[in-house]
Structure formats: C-alpha cells, structure tokens
Length: 149
Length: 149
DNA sequence: ATGATTAAGGTCAAAGATGGTCAAAGTCAG
DNA sequence: CTGACTTTGACCATCTTTGACCTTAATCAT
Image 1 (cartoon, rainbow over the protein chains, first blue to last red):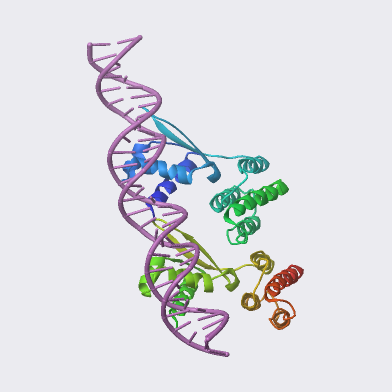
Image 2 (image 1 turned 60 degrees about the vertical axis):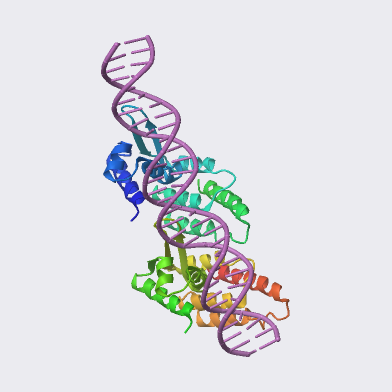
C-alpha cells in the first residue's frame, strides 16, 4: 500500500466521521504518516479534487488549517454540475473519476456505470487519435448525462 | 513451449486462484520468467484482450501494478460489451476468438456459433477484398449481436 | 502601531519507481 | 522463401516521494 493511499484513506475516514467536512492540520498529518508536508498537498491535489467529489480550503499562518469537504448535491443538480464541469475534452482518468463519483453518489446505476466505463475507455475509442478521443469522450458523456437527467 | 505461453498460463492460473482478478507486477513477472518487461505487455495484448474474455488495467509510477480480470457478465451485458469492443474492422482470428468465448460463456448456442463461424470465415467473404472483409465482418457481427440481445 | 518572530500552509522541480510503445531481429510452419 | 508470431531493447510516459525555497497569518516586543 502506498503512503499516499494510506493518507487518502485516513482523510476519507475523517471526512466521513466528521459528517462530510474534516478540519485537518498539514504538519500533523505529515508527522502522523512520517512524510514530508508537501506529500499531503500531493494527496489532496491528486485524490480530493471536485471530480472526486471533494473540495479543499485552507489557510496559512498561525492557526492555519486544511478543510476537506465532500460535495453533496441532488441527483439532477450533480448531473448538471458535472455536465457544466466537463469542457470540450475529457481524458480517461477524469472520466473514470467522474463515473466512480457519480456511481458512489447513487446518481448512476451499476449498469450505467459499467457501460459508460466501457464506452469511455481508451480501448473503445482507440480507433480515433488521442486528442479526438478526449473530445469524443466529453461529448458522449455529456449527451448521456443530459439524457439521464 | 513458448515463453509467452508459459507467462499466459501463469497469469490464467493467478486469475483463477484469485477468484477472477489478479494483481501483478510487470517487473516481477519479467524477472520470474527471465524476459524483458515488454514481453509481459506482448502477452497481455495478444492473450488477455476483451475478446479473450479479460480486461487489463494498470498504473505506472511508484506502486504501479497490472490487474488482469476475467470478464463475467450477464448475457446482454456481455453482448453489448462485445459490440462496443468491435471496431470498424474485425479480422478472422478475432472473430473466432469472440465467437469461441461467447459460446463457452453460454451466450450463443452451438448452432449460432457454427453458423456465425461460417459466415465470418475468410472463405465466405472471399468475394470481397481483404480490407473490406474485415469491415464486413465487424458490421455483420455487430448487427447479429445487437439482434440477439 | 509596527517590525520581527513564529507558525502554519504552498509550489515546484528533481529523483525514484513503475509500466508502455514501437520497431528491429529472431523463429517457425507452410 | 514468405508471412505470421515471438522476443528484445532502446526510449517514453506516468505516478510517487522528497526537499529546498516561498507566502501568509498571528503574535510579541518595543
């Protein structure tokens, strides 16, 4: 298990236990996991993005803090939010994050999740060039989501 | 026995023992079989495709891994998966692999298997140019599968 | 008040750890 | 011999970990 995953796991647990929003200290986390403080930033920027369903706020200086919150919205609101978030291009990793998040939020069913995962996979779109794939992914997913809402 | 076959055999065994999904390390496999790492990729791309009934996910970087999973789905889901996997062209070997897999999975009957094998064979399509044959094979099989589901 | 000090958190690039790609060379059946 | 499949290796891409250096906020001494 990677240290980043352990840290992420800890944060998820904290957010869950704190009812959707945890107040954390970067230096304390770093000490607890015996890593450099910047690793906490790494974990936050790679695993707690809006695409993953989280927001992060922080303040520096004395009494500084990091607050990680889970985004929660109604189905249609989340769908439209996601649609608006998707730009003209969407890479495979982002698509996976979005689908996972929507599935966990109960916005799409298991079947919809699996089917869309396939449709948006690199393999399914491999007939197109890399750049075109991202464009296709964006338009396909947007259309599907609008259809769903 | 080819090295690639030994590796494939090892992976199949691992997937089976791990209940349908094995977590592997490319470098470790390469070391175990005393081959270059890229040979592992060769084995995966030639013997663990969706057509063969497997999916492969991987991640690079520290803590990277390769996960090989056997696809197990309901009839319709498997059919749609196959349909989505088929591109604009489909060569005879792939078609055979698909048909064999679907037959073994009980998705198509013995009769359907035999009939489709004939229809999609090089011979049956020999009236068309080589390239066109692959395109035909893809469109024919896709339409048949959609019909079936 | 205000400048210095202290206490957070942020950025970024380098180093490390894996896996991926592609084309050349080798092998083997027909 | 030829075409298809296999084996290799050089070079590439991506993810993680670490550390030097930067920014911001609160507090303290004068």
